[in-house]
Amino acid sequence: MSQEKPLDLNLLRVFSIVCKTASFSRAAEELNLTQSSVSNAIARLKLSIGEELFIRVGRGVKPTSVALNLYQQLEQPLLAIEQVVSGLHLFDPKQSKRSFYVYANETIIQLLQTRVDEYLCDSAIDIVFRETPIGEEQIQMDLQLEKVDLALDITQPHLASFASTKVMQDRLNCVVRKEHPRIQGSLSTEQYFAEKHIIHNMRRSNLSMADLMTKEVLPKREMYGEQSSLLNMLATAAKSNAIAVATQSYTDAYAELFGLQVLPLPFVTEPIDLYMVWCKKLQHNAANLWLRETLLLLIKSS
Image 1 (cartoon, rainbow, N blue to C red):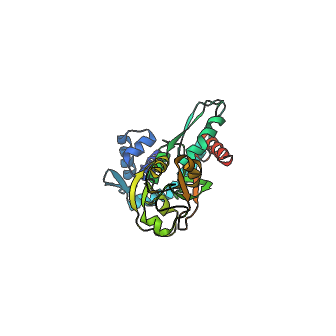
Image 2 (image 1 turned 90 degrees about the vertical axis):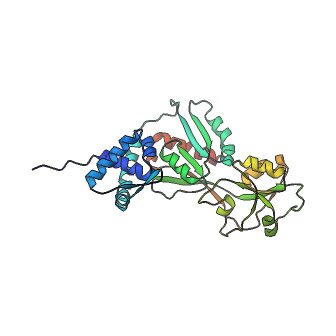
Image 3 (image 1 turned 30 degrees about the vertical axis):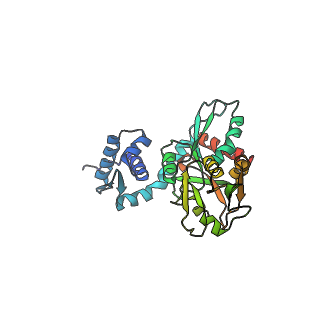
């Protein structure tokens, strides 16, 4: 009597990555395979299961209900296996010449860059900071594809494939130039919404920083300009009558240099929590663990 062939477990790994990335091409990139190899693996798994697993949506793919159910059951066991295997990799910071890549915003880069340089002055290791992408989806994708080793960000992912810990807290301030014709020493709600605004184009949950950090639904503001750099925002505020919102640590460092008034926002805002975020599969990876511990040490000493 013929026996059914056992399932190739490698197919489940490919399936899991396609579910995470919603793309055969991105899954191929993460797995270091060709796109046709990924497509063939999914076709083989489909044949073994006897059910359709993905449907084409635009340039990507979307899992069927069968695939989603399978993925939910497989995600934690596969993650546990990856953690065990990743933890076996040896890492000696005294011998390594590795470069680590970390997503961080300007505030954090300014805070940590000099400390990192001093800490690693006798080491062959590099910690390279890259500016955080505008949207959190790109951060999570780049972590999964291991384009970066770690992210320092203001939002905490709730996907099971990520781990995170809160590392520091900041607040938002409002800045205007010292010679502002209508705002001097204090700022009312009416004044705030009557002025034009320089908006930081970082978005989380499709909200700006000010909207994200308040429980109120803020009225629409008239935009003066949109900037990707906090430093450029402060420079623009110094040369115009527009309002900018930036972190307290940044306004404390640069307000005098740019000739800016620093004022509290005229509505209640939540503190900004900064999280260290990494792929859970690297939880016990020696190199990633060293990176997390090193940055935590430098953040606490700042």
